[in-house]
Length: 120
Image (cartoon, rainbow, N blue to C red; front, side):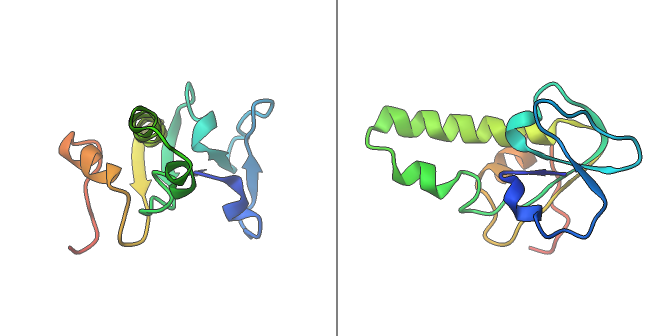
């Protein structure tokens, strides 16, 4: 399970292992990680959660940008963050969010990386 921020699962009742830069996944246990730590990892199945409009790209980052070039860099970084998280799945990928979802989901749909399963 990958999230923008780990605090989203602090009260989870799932038996899980929170991954960080010093912790490896535990077999037969849900591994929870931020999208930032996903690079280089691979899992049989991945759930990328909370792909909402204000989460990816993170609204707080956008609001702090004062230069147009910096804004483009923020968008590129956030888009890449989601892409890396989604491509960690070897066999199955589930991306969740509430409407309105992240504008970057449309990019992944256009590339065939993600298919929309919920009704339009």
